[in-house]
Image (cartoon, rainbow, N blue to C red; front, side, top):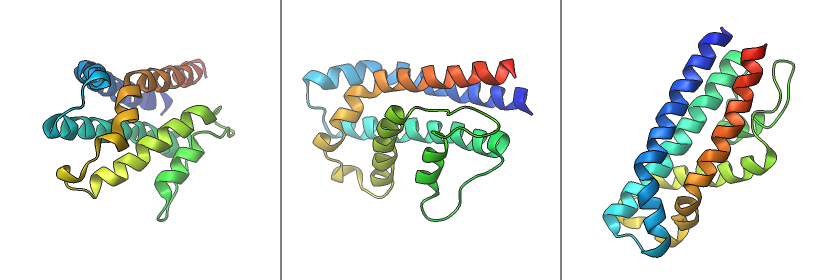
Length: 153
């Protein structure tokens, strides 16, 4: 099962890399210019997709490596926390520092799912957008370390 999980994670990482590459210029532009509603909506969709991809990877690992997927109304938060913990099958997947960053994206995704595009506020998402390329790189680096561990096992 472990080679199969590596395959799924690599596919998700490819999709996330494409997301980062497709939106990186708009993220950079947003450092100096306040985006209009169309750009804000696109960037909000990017943030939503980013954390969705992150969570897909976490779910693959929880199900196939940890053999334990959190349940209940706060399962998203519990899943993120689970990925910071070492267990008998693996080392921690993400650092506590990265957990704090990813928590912000998770919270934004919740807002995005329940808001109309016209309700999105640039000031509330600006820091996530501007830091997205760097935060993606941090996430990818930590996932690559985990994949190296799995491939050596």
